[in-house]
Every structure is written in C-alpha cells, then in structure tokens.
Image 1 (cartoon, one colour):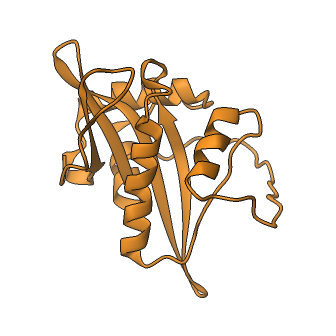
Image 2 (cartoon, rainbow, N blue to C red; image 1 turned 60 degrees about the vertical axis):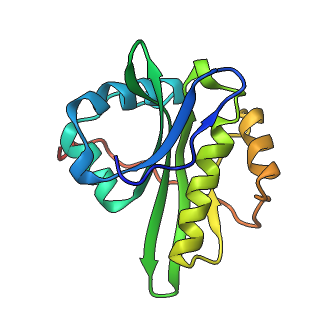
Length: 168
C-alpha cells in the first residue's frame, strides 16, 4: 500500500503500526471489511462501502490508513481522509472521516494519522486545513487542539436533500 508512513509502537498495542496512503490501484476487497468496521466505530449512518466507492474515494481524496497485525493478518485500524478542493480562490483542504478502532483508542494512533495528513497538506501547498467535529467528541477536540487546530469563525449550514438511489 504505497510508501509507508512512520512505523511506531502505540502505548496500548505493543505492535508496530504503519500509516500508509491507500491508492486506488491498491484497493482490495479485504479493505471493505476494515473500512466498514471503522465507519461503524465512527457511528456513521453508512457502515458499508463497495469496492467502487472505496476506489473512487481513494482516487479523489488522500486516504491514509493505519495498519496493524491482527490475528496474524494486516488490518486497517485507523483512517483519515484529506479532501482537496480546487476552487477559483485556490486549494482548500478538509479533514474528514478521522477514526481509530476502539481497541486502539488513546494509543497515539490518532496523532500519527493526523501528522501524516498534515504532512500531505504541507506538500500540497495548502495555507490551512479545515475540519468539523461533533461537540460530543471531547477526546477528538483535545487531539485537534493539541495538533494546532483552533475554532474558526464560521457557521456550517446544511440542507437536507430528498434521498435517491445511490450511484455505486
């Protein structure tokens, strides 16, 4: 899976964790189970993903995965998505889908994923990175603030659209 990120041993999990970029050509069927598990951990309404959807996400975004050995095979135990938008005013980056498997929480893995995403943002030449975070996710807020994020003077507005069949 792409060029490996920094391998480290987390406090909770006494095993090396590798952070790598998941590229579209490297997406395999076994990734679907891991991503679905992480979406469930995140509390997402969507807890399953197809191969086409995951490849599309890897093609249009920068997906960084934390890989650990679980039960003798490599498993994705963390994920962060860096979303580039090329607008008339320039590059804008959003951090989305930042999630760490329950078994690896409070281990430093979130910091590792975030550091890799910020490295990519710097390499892309971004001035800043935006993210939204549910106010109930206190640990995530602490991580983001320790990593240099601060509240922005903005309001997020949302319009709910009628549900239609997805193009998969």
